[in-house]
Amino acid sequence: MAFNDFRFRVGIRIVFIGLVVALIVFMLSKPNMFFAASLTFLILVIQFVELYRFTSQTNRKLTRFLESIKYSDFISGFTSDNQLGQSFKELNEAFNEVLEAFRKARSEKEEHWQYLNTVVQQVRTGILSFDDEGEVQLINANAKKFMGVSSIQNLDELIEINSRLYKAIYDVEPGKSTLYKGSSDLLLTIQATEMRLRGDTVKLVTLQNIQTELQRQELEAWQNLTKVLRHEIMNSITPISSLTSTLREILEHDLTKVSEHYELKNEGAEDLKEGLDTIESRSKGLIKFIDAYREYTSLPHPNFKTVHLKDLLSKVENLMRNEIRKGGVVFVITLESTHLTVEGDEEMIEQVLINLIKNAIEACQGIKNPKVELKTRYIDEHILIEVIDNGPGIIGEALDKVFVPFFSTKKTGSGIGLSLSRQIMQMHNGNLYVSSIPNVKTVFTLRF
Image 1 (cartoon, rainbow, N blue to C red):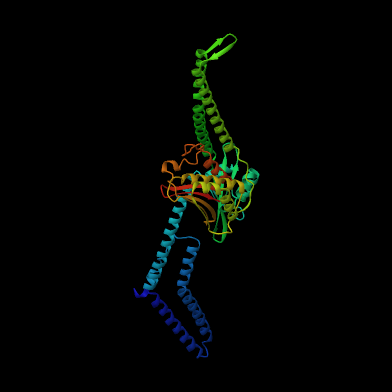
Image 2 (image 1 turned 135 degrees about the vertical axis):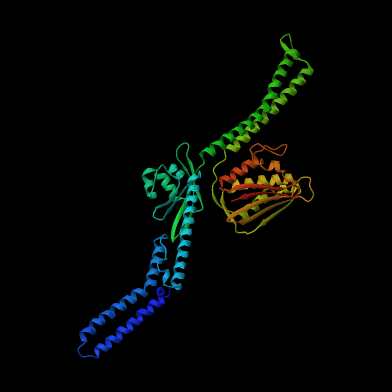
């Protein structure tokens, strides 16, 4: 109805104010009506106050709306003054729609938080985040288990419980990892990253117990090593044992005593000599295998210093000059930059390169236009040295095994060279990789 319209009700109040003002003016023109005019003026003031209150409804409504958002009160609504006209009704509807949108967003946020929290609590990796003051923002059950706490509000509480773990967590640099050795069944790899949340720096730390996995891999490695040792030793011991029995039979049948000395038939003497030569050969092979194993397990610790790759590669080329000439290969060195350096043991890195270049030269034997290239590159904050040859390559089945100790694709190979080279690179906090396209190229990559 028109009587409920906001503009109509404001207009009525203004009309009444105008009438009261006219009445006051009339009374003031009469000499005996000053007191009545004063009372009427009070009525005018009250009317002005009531008009101000009435017209301030929109301000109060807006204030209540903003307070609802500020305090996350999305339950209340705006419908009580819908009868004050279409403009009020539309304003109320707009306010209610905004509150409903906030309500849905908050509900979705809470659902996502619950889902994320459930995932975080279920993962086997320990997850912990804290700010610059050490206040813990997030921690899951596994992190509490690794830290030996049931609850923790500030990371400083860990100092009294486990100061070594506290230091390891605080000292780990963002983007890097460190190891923490706890009990016999706890070996944590600790990784960290930093982020900015609402203007504050938050450190996110993950803790993963790799002890079980290491024990499993250690057992598997020992089993593989035992198989290799058994295979190699049995290959040597079996013929030696068999030949020993054969030689005893030869001595029993062909050795005769004549007066004070023994005589051996020519045929028996030849068999005896051949058997002893075989025993000697197999014994030397077994000794060579044991020496290779000893070399693999007793590498010295690297003596780290700055190594200029340009000088290192030139030195390797000079050392391999005769091998390159005998192999008849084209040898090329390609440097992305003449200023690249690495931190490492120059002699050990040199040994790795010599081993890889020798393998590359041998792989190129018998092919047309053999070529071996030594190349340096800088990619993604890593320095790479690549040894590339255009030999027949390595078949896919063998690619995964070339770094396994005592595995070799060559008839005369010991199977130690590549495994030893990878071990040296790992001691330099790097690695050695291989990729191969048969009959096109094979690339061994040293990554620092």
